Image 1 (cartoon, rainbow, N blue to C red):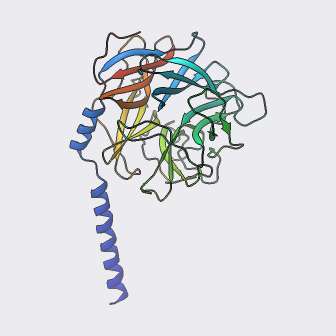
Image 2 (image 1 turned 90 degrees about the vertical axis):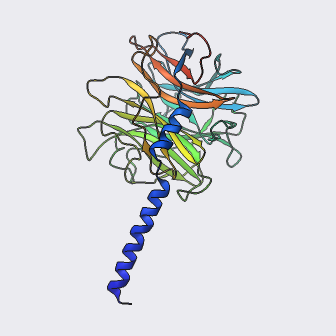
Image 3 (image 1 turned 45 degrees about the vertical axis):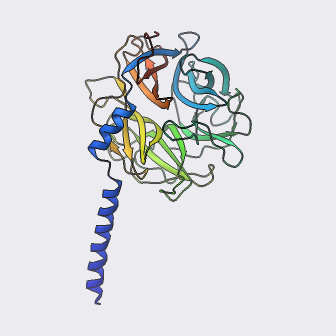
Length: 361
């Protein structure tokens, strides 16, 4: 066989292989519609967790379950920066605050004034246990960290924290000394060279990425379209939860303007579902809403272009209805989100797949 014929056959085979992989990974319109009908939550129950006073803002709910009780981590901004808190509930509707799990520090640490945490390695099965899983005898979370005071001010990076203790009890989680991803790393991509925001870590049990753990996170920064000012969602991978590196050159979700952020992952059947929020995609619309995308390989995502999962409709969320954490329990879908009103009051609200009662505002 001549070299020319061999190269031609090789290219043809490679093209066919890529086409087959693309076809196998494709999520059809019918499947997207089926997912939407499974996850939609048209009934807004209302606010379920609000700060003690209007000077504080609650944000970014993440749920897990342990010992028959639900727990929610959420972050609070009080003017200085972010701290991470824990709340608990028996019924997903009535919540009681337990205390802080990541607090401000009066040291010179890189994260002394910003510590917004998001528990990782939760059970991703739709309608599953929602338990946090251990790795290396520890529970883990990733967090947005920074040194500068103010609302998401200064350099923001991704840190990792862990605990060997019961995660359902409010206590300070141990933080690694240095961030694991920063906007100034040698491998920083073109779309993340300013600030890194919320992250979600899950296991890649099938090693679809070739690595044990996958982190999805949104970031701001743009050296290709600097006028856009966009936030996008990308990936990083790890085999030990401590050392992380970027997985792709480009983001996995990119709307080229506004914000695409706060990914939260569930798996429905053989399809991965990424819940996320969008904001300011259209210059004339200054709203934030929740949406979703689907994937079979954790890398290539099909975006939903139909009806929004959650959008502003009520007096408590008439500005922003965004930042999703969605679970299914005993046949009911609960969509937790950050609700912001026209007075910039910010709390945690929930919408459900069935009507549970009159909206609690």
